[in-house]
Image (cartoon, rainbow, N blue to C red):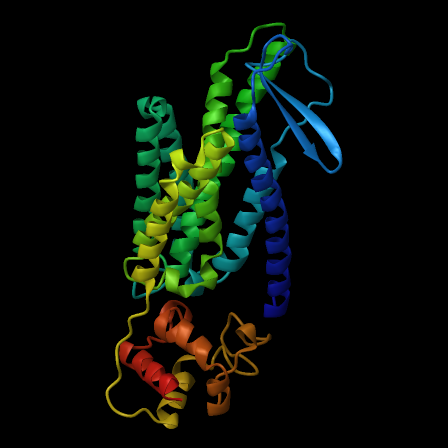
Length: 393
């Protein structure tokens, strides 16, 4: 398969993933808002917990929520599930095309942990499965009855996984796997808990029985978890575009800070939607800002300083040794052979190096993510020389 064809497949899957992901997130945010907006009113139907009035698109809507379920169900009952299922399936397909196809380049960094691409893929799949199993066991344990302790346990699970990923995969591979693991948990919540519980309630109604309210309670808990995890997972999924996030040796701490910030922001809006006055939950915003400020400070570039003058010939020798197998008019690297250089960046002459100097600074000097997987063994001294030369231009 040529690099061009692979790029188109990657783009098509990514596009589809974005579309269904937006649909899922939109539905999640809307229904959590709707649940918090319910109010008890006069003349409500039997079994109704609360109602909400909405206006949108030139029309008015009146929504009712039942404590468990109505006495009968219409034939056209809509199930919100395919948004989650397709987001997971397209996400996993994207993981396969982008990371598994060239696992030895995108997942493996010998300086972190030397392994084959096949071993990296096996660890990837097993870790996604393990993340769901541990999370599900936590929810089903006694912790599931205590919201605060369960939240802390899930936080520790995510940060612990991040720590493990950063000691196994490349920087970008580690961050994408945090997002993939949390995304898997969210999709599995829908597939393994929320929808099955709704089906049990529906089956009981059709059989003329009274549904057990525990199924709705459990489903709501998992749905709320998905809502709070959305903002952190979104940032993880775009993290590969921002090397400063994962280039720090202890980048797993960045994950912890992102989770804190995302959850605090989500909590603020959820409580406002629930009717709390802003001042009551305002404390969440400074905490989120503090977490982000620490993350910015933690990810600030810190590079080794080169000693002595660095000539054009020195820089060209470094790019010839470490860069041009991918970044020339006709790449010779197996991953890009037959296609164009990544992002159309060529580094085969001093003129081209000057043209792309800022990208080199971000990707190879400060970000330390290029060459991919450090296949060529570029040294800190060589990175420092590149940085010194660029800053002197």
